[in-house]
Image (cartoon, rainbow, N blue to C red; front, side, top):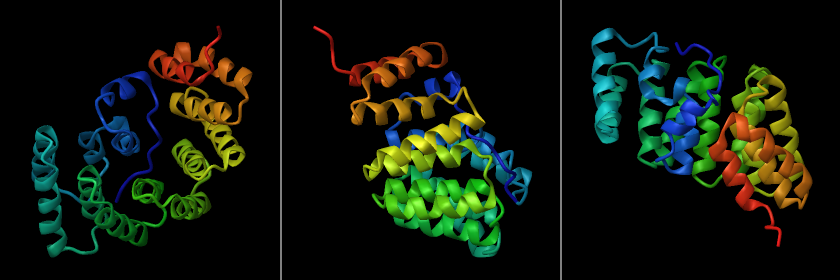
Length: 228
């Protein structure tokens, strides 16, 4: 089954994701080091020959091929949470969110103690425009584990989606207690401060991000009112 993982929030990850859509950026950051290749190293229910094929699909960016291959293996073994994870990942990259949600639901049903499946399911709900369902999913995830920064980060993003900004700030703060160098959580909190017109606090985060992630620091700075 999938081993527990934490959100990789370093500069190297974000730089590698710069060309992705916002939803793909978050999705890829939910797997170790932001790549499906590393995700595969955490799959215990997939043999080495299949790992190689999965890596080849990823290298080509062939998400249709990856989804089809996962479905072929699921036809042989419906109880393998790892193949449901691969399928969900592929459908998420294809932006076929209803099917991705179905796959991740199977992951959490088969491996309810693994936080990664819950986080991926929540992000699929968000990507499909159903952030309230994402919040409910993340609340369930927090009953499984309360020490995963990614879960609190996604909770912050989900609250931001629906305009519950103070709740979003609280969730980002929890993520940062667990990982003070979590650049995307700092950015999310700064963005929430801007929306609340708490500009001085947002400006402090711009400065904090200059060392953690200059790109995100610059993006947040653009959201602040420009001095004349």
